[in-house]
Amino acid sequence: MNIAISSKIRLLRSLVMSNFLYACKSWTLNANIERRIRAMETRCYRRLLGISYKDHITNEQVRRGIENAIGPHVDLLTIVPQWKLRWYGHTACSSGLAKTTMQSTVNGGRRRGRQKKGWDDNIREWTGLELRNTLRGAEDREE
Image (cartoon, rainbow, N blue to C red):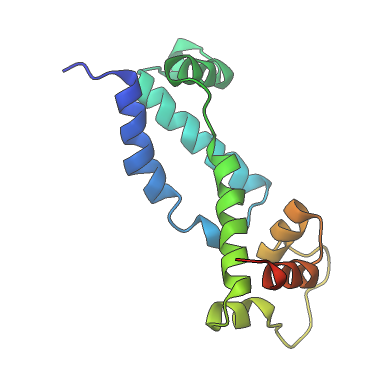
């Protein structure tokens, strides 16, 4: 049975990618996670197009093949920050447990050495603002 590539891509996005992105709002994106997301997306597109790694086709060529099939396409590494920032703004405007947890700190010391990247570090990196300023901006925002 032959199915059009555009239909396959729509099915991939609605069934596979939506499940994959279900909990992305809670992920801390670091270089390793970004590499894994990119690899998963490329693996799905290779499978969809029937391209094996033995065919010696680069990942960039696979992405171009997808763009030729369906037009401009938004990759997962663009979607994840958008969803995280949207969820952050939503919880910053609310007055529930999520906001309380987001603003709370943990007592005690930290380990020696460089600290691991945290969820809030992603927000700081993407907005260019400190968390208290982003919270204030989200609370002052007109509906």
